[in-house]
Length: 89
Image (tube, rainbow, N blue to C red):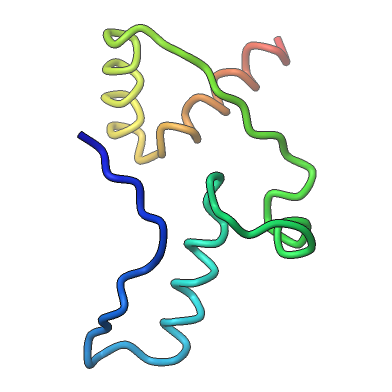
């Protein structure tokens, strides 16, 4: 069962620096389901990109994950590569 995080835990480790905290907040705020809206989202690195949701059969997803691991890519990176190659044929 997946648990949805609604906020960052209050505890921090002794090795975290203010810069780490900022990076963590930026990472969490950049998530698609983040509560951050408006100007913060507009300035994200994904500007000009659109997020989609797509359902795949489990067997195909397993093959995608195996291939992406072999190629050293993320799942999304492999899917983007494959789609790009297909539409540019």
